[in-house]
Length: 428
Image (tube, rainbow, N blue to C red; front, side, top):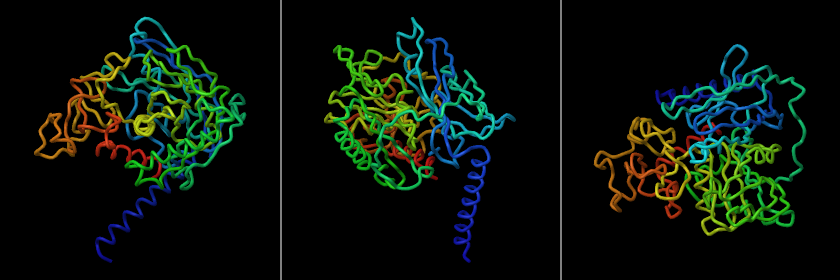
């Protein structure tokens, strides 16, 4: 056998052994179900606390059963699961709407609370779930709350939380080795459910028309949950329009006209409780421009605007892949969102404090750094100043990218690689 063949066989063998060990580890600590922890984040600009609201036992754990420890170090928050002996057996990074609110002017003068839901594989033995925040001054994680969980606790709720019907939009294989996206209907009445399914299929088409999703289509399952609303549309407070809808979505989040969110994320999580789910995306039945995407929380946007495709893949870039915004001139409610003295965790922006950890190796020697915002460098990976809502001090990798503008041709090479890494996390 040649040395090359031996090396390939050896790598396959090592990979198989590693996978088998990881699966055995999963079976040692977890059942096939999942546990949802409903949590309340509360505080203001200066301080925050986290409180446990309720625990739910849900159907299948559809996440990876081999990649249980989050290796990305993404997110303004993280939660970890520890055994009674202190062994870490699961972790995940995330953002939430409360973290964004804390950077607004309102957070300087009042306290608020926001609901959120977080999943882990259902444990076989007692565990402790610990939540951490990323300190703005250092970028390090600091504990903000811990909750013991006894899997035999009779107060863990096992009720069926909704009677929504669901549809399979695209199926590639078993959920535990695929990235499972669930489209949630918002502002669709019972009579509009056929429209929702057509919209869900259209959004799936948007996704698989753009790289790297196009090349990785067989790594995804896409589901659609028919969460029926009493009213059609959504809240538009600035126009005094209020609707009774499945997940209570609303424009005018943080008093920004186009910022469309579902402030109570628990409603979104509850709507997908019967489905495999790695990422939730809410399709809002409106032609008004707007949307939002929050890492490992949810993404959502309008169904019927001319930029529906562009906004969808942009917001999914946030919510699924942890990509940062690369624009810097649009209206936002945030004040000093990034600390320029530390490296942001998002893979597609940098303050140059630890640029070696980002895309420095992808820049050709002849490309100037910083890179001029000139058409000459349109299709060149470089170091373009402006991003993360700031015109100075933050840099992006491409002159124009889908994370910067709806008019961009697609994702830049840095964002494409970052998205692929997340797909690999769920599927390999």
